[in-house]
Every structure is written in structure tokens, then in C-alpha cells.
Image 1 (cartoon, rainbow, N blue to C red):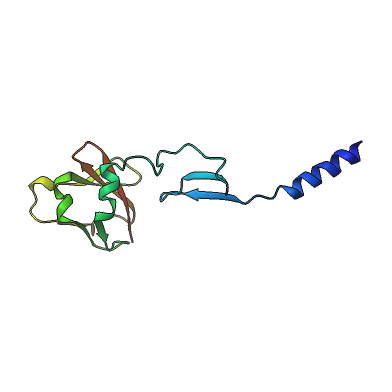
Image 2 (image 1 turned 45 degrees about the vertical axis):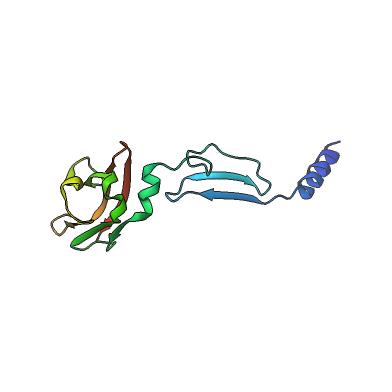
Length: 143
């Protein structure tokens, strides 16, 4: 009887070969795990059918150059999204200290230069406060 169950287990295991797919978002969070047929859907806040937020809409319209930073960081945004950005904070990764704050509403133009020469090496966040109350974060590395 034991041999029968082992044979049955091996037979079932060999006939049900399915490809398992893993999908990740930009920050490395797993958003899908399952077979190619579409079963095994995980709960996700970034479903393709959801309405994109303002943060999602402006994400590709903001440039930060150069990354990694040595002395100065240029933040450039497209002119059509300038009215949606309220302010920008530069924060250190391992603390809650705000290194620098920029009020975008009072600035002319579509760029700002952060002088990072006096800051230590490490990881920093650019936190964009948007008009609808949402926050968009961008990670910056300083070498």
C-alpha cells in the first residue's frame, strides 16, 4: 500500500508541470505569484486596473542627475507638472532629519540644485509633496 501511494504521488507530480511566474514592482515587492494560466493572484495595491495617482503620473516627469551624487544634485521636472509639486524635502535615509527644504511654488523655472558637498556619504530621499496631499519619494545615493 505504501508503494502504491508513492507511485501515485510521483505520477501526479510528473503530469502536472506548470510554470510558476513571479512578478515584482520597481521597489522589489512581489505583486504576482502563480502559474501562467493566471491563478494564484496576490493582493496588490498596484493593480493595472486601478486609477493612477498623481504621484504615479509625475514619476516619469522628474529627473535627478547625476546619480550617484558627488557634490551637486540637479532635480529637473517638466513644466506641465510644476503646479502639482508643492515642496521638496531632502532627507537622510537613516534619520528623520530634513537636510533641506525647497518651496517649489515660490521658485521660478523647472529645476533646483541641491548642494550635497557637505553631507556625508550614504543614501538620501527626495520627498515630493504634491497638490493632492500625496507624497512621491525618490532615492538618491551620494558617493
